[in-house]
Length: 245
Image 1 (cartoon, rainbow, N blue to C red):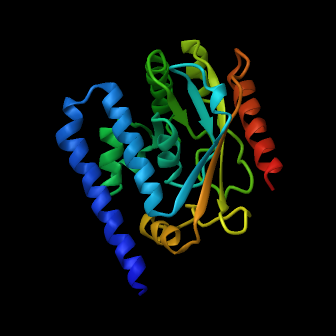
Image 2 (cartoon, one colour):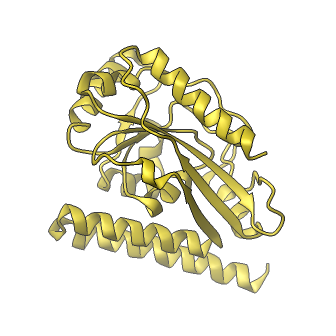
């Protein structure tokens, strides 16, 4: 095994344990601003360890303090890419909570977990997200799964109801990954199929430097139908992905 990759693995492990230390011993004493500053710094350092750069398009569009952000989903690292730009609270599938270390970290960061396929869980989550949207910026991945990033899977509309109930602004975010050397899209970060978390991490370590680009839409119209909000968000993200081919 390449010694430089072994060193990178050790650096990532040390960085994860550093994050656990911060969450366990320092976060209880931090105010919201300090927490967000700490999250953003940690995430930016994590991206650097993977030789990943961050590019943000449309930052000026995001004018509100609390809102619903709908994003396409490619990888577990999407969350850290978004948080390296601006910390958000996330809604994730319940399986994430059982991930070693990362699941525990997600819980400490206030992630809301939803059980797929259970209507009661979805209804309760809609109410919870609507309440949280009154004071927090929440990001959702309405595809309900991750893809290779070449296209957008149909958006599930359930959680858009929370924005309508809370009368909260909605934005769409397109996330894409590019090979820094070639400028072409790369599927190296994709976390799909039967791939395990460690396999995905290894793919990122072995890949050439990557640019993670997030593109933020203007505020969506205040629609009162959740399916219309979901379809509009999906179409805006799909258009962004097509423009970057």
